[in-house]
Image (cartoon, rainbow, N blue to C red; front, top):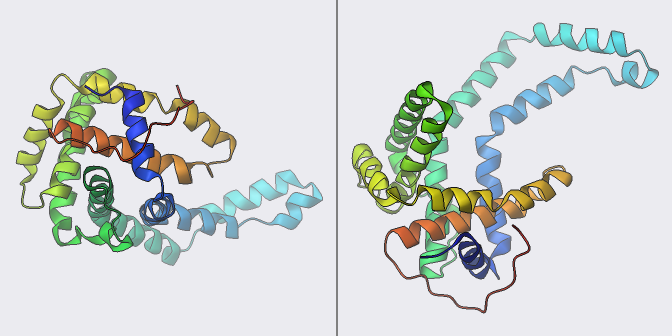
Amino acid sequence: MFTASEFRRIARDKLRGHWGRSVLVTFIVSLICGISSIYNLAKNMGHMDFDMLFAGNYNDFFAGFAAADTGTSLFGSLIALVLSIVVLLFSGALEMGLNKYYIDLVAENRQGEVSVIFSRFDIFFKALGLNLFMALFIWLWTLLFIVPGIIAGYRYCLAPYLMAENPNLGIREAVNMSKELMAGHKWRLFCLNLSFIGWAILSALTCGIGDLWLSPYIYAANAAFYVDRTGRNIPMAREPNPDPAV
């Protein structure tokens, strides 16, 4: 049974020689899923009066910013709403496409094309339904207390991987399979995710730039966990490297 450090080692092994494309596909998905937030940030930045800021008139600057923010045009609000709806509709399918990329990388030593992240758009309604189903039940468990909600999140977390690899699976079927695969293994995945905390701190010190490399590392390690839980051997092509992350 692999430990957290061994899953990280597998992730590094699979990513070596494939970092460039892995960073690219992960960045594209993150960019698309965050497009509504980026739009809102750009819109708010457009309201700022930097002449006031650099002149030292901070009270006038913040008052003007607040007034501009509350006076946002209806057109701008509609654009933000449309972008949010588009992201909601397609983020599940994009995430499944990204999962498929990393499953192929880990299980088959195969680097997919960038287009693989769009390969699950044909089931985007099902992907959306799965995300909503998971979110609803995680929220219901969270009403009891935060810990049951976290446990529920880990219980259902393999469902998107299962559907990414098997698009014909139904929503309840994928969720039930995830519950079976995660029985007795939720703590292992929690420890794996926690083991990246050192890297996350270092990434924060780079103002998030380090996430360009950290995110593929985490995705590859989680894909390795999924492949292992589905009972497949993970071929190792290279000698292990030491990992300074705790």
